[in-house]
Image (spheres, rainbow, N blue to C red):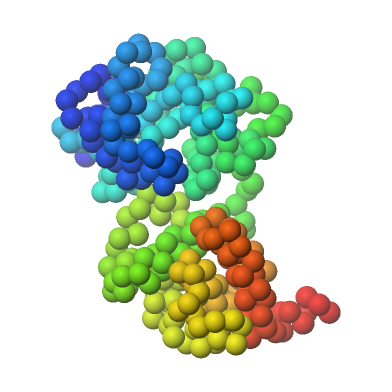
Length: 315
């Protein structure tokens, strides 16, 4: 790879490419956001010599990634002064090759040169990635801060910013497992609608950016297990349901199938972890009261596969 990093200065076609990338990746987080709006946002940066700004990564002349530094990001974070890391995207075929670190370094150096002593980002899915890159976690969930290179080794961090918790000694990353479950939900949900072969489903989702910081083998095991064994899982859950499985909301159906597979096959994972994860995923992606239904079904299902564990907990 012949990697080059440059600040965007209005080169033709770039705003269109960036808009397409970013709307495809994050439109579900911003209802009503579209490519025309994204192009306008990027183009507006050209009027500012400082921030906001975007840096581009090229392999020879091919655009492969971008990162932005904005003065504002989310209205929910209006009390945080900025600047903000945003619009951080690498094309799938260029991931894992040092492009992300090169982009982040270039942007951080530029932010520092403008006199900023720290910058921020918000993420719900990449906590471990940014922690490993030197960002500090705020007591507000999902909010991270990093001091630019000019400011030394985090010596200025306020008391409410802390490093991420150290990794577990058993090698299991709970955050990566959680991301794998969320991605498995999306994959199983897509399969339920399309009946696409499992290899095609895995191929589609394995190249998503989130999978860089997920437990990929766990994700694959969940997807393969549900698609290959959903009939057995549904039969086992039948007495726990108040309706046929095919009449359950598709999101809750996927959550139940994944959790049932874990209860049955992953005895190494405590049943309370499985139930709590399923409930949280149903809250995030399901209907308003879907998580309550999931909780009731899985409480009964735990008695099918985890009775000794339940007995030990009660005893």
